[in-house]
Image (cartoon, rainbow, N blue to C red; front, side, top):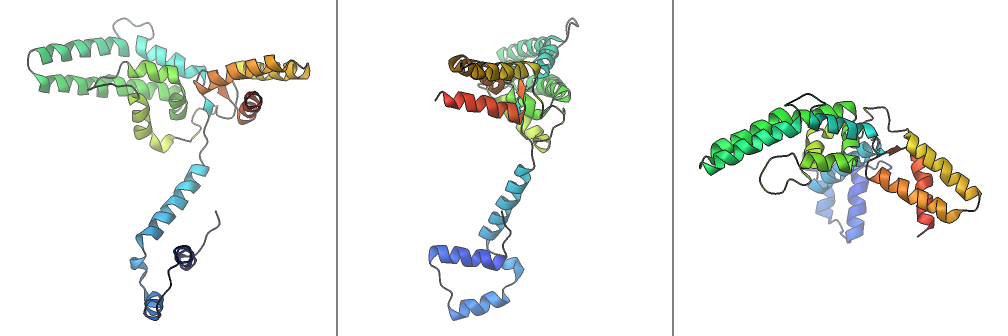
Length: 240
């Protein structure tokens, strides 16, 4: 977006709403202090800055299988007995339910808080350390598995995604894993097959392969580069 001056912005807005300056207002505008800048101008600039910041961020298509592998390891304890998020969840849930049955809701809440801070959040951090916040957010199987092990009041569906966006907001859009621009081998194979089928005139089969791999990418099972995702998307769109 091309930068414009404060005066130009004000004139554009006045023109759009049919507002005319009186002589007194024109005189006042000439001596107006910067601190009296209308709030809407500040909001406009904030939006401009936000759009510029977003444009610099890189968003991956899908996520690497590493995310699912790291999630499974964090949940199971990677083969170590009596460890892992699943084990900690079971213990914390049993303790919470027992305390509630005894009429001690305060202590039950403390158990939940300790579990989330000492087990759930560190597990998410470990998964992100092997991948990135964006990849975890794109991985539906991992998010679903983690939501089932989140303790709180009411439904915890969507909790993990909400937590990641809040706790790792400053890291979103940054290619921490160095994989955002690459395609997993499964995607490369699928794209090559789509091209081969198209060249042979087998359009229906090419569309079928494209639809299947696109769903897997969108569900977070695989990661695709911009170019490969564009090719897949064009083939899928051709069927609509």
